[in-house]
Length: 293
Image (cartoon, rainbow, N blue to C red; front, side, top):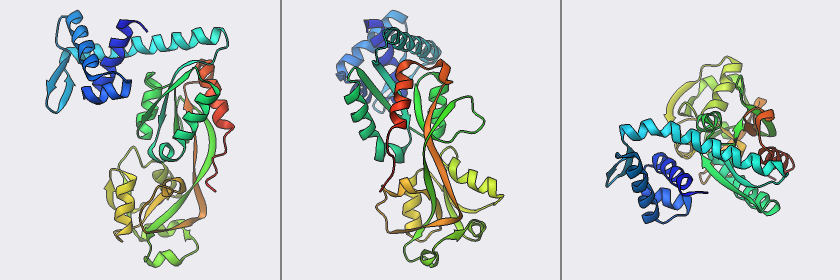
């Protein structure tokens, strides 16, 4: 990677994280190295690209104008690097993977360790975010692939990996906790705690298909907050079984009738447009056992 490429990567990471120290840590550079690279890029551009403050850095108007151009250039270079490796059937290069919180917590360390053990010339860059973040990252070329729940009516390709049961969660002493299962239509009788739009895709899909309008009491920012409020008897919630593996709250969880699940898989651009590295990663993930037992 030449000096210009390094500067562009640093520029994008600083713009994304809005923090020089965090950008340096993410790219394994020194803080001074990142600062010098940004300063060199600003000298080359002849203008300031970032506003500096104690809180961090933000793009100037000129920086915002440059952002999509730099992103496109980096994406093209990344694609070229992977294509060059593919010419010799060499599985190598940087694979940019998106993942959501519960999947990252349980599976990503194992996936990265085992894949890079089998293919030591590969480096995996991991980005954690909401389903929407991951879909947009793949569509824009910032990510090569990403773990998601099943996609409907989307231009991305989706390779299913496993089904993750959806459960009703409640405080351990909630009256429903003694039930073996809860009929789906009974959900409308209880106050619901949900996540903000963009992270509630799986739950809303269940309600939409069942033509149920829930009594939503709170809309919170993350699964931990949902579980915490639920444990305090503020309502019930729908939660994938995988997410409960990370729970530290006193909760009861019961299945729905009929049973519901989300399908977790790997989203990519159309398969015919993907590189050897991405196709190899898909095949590797298909070979894994994702059971929680």
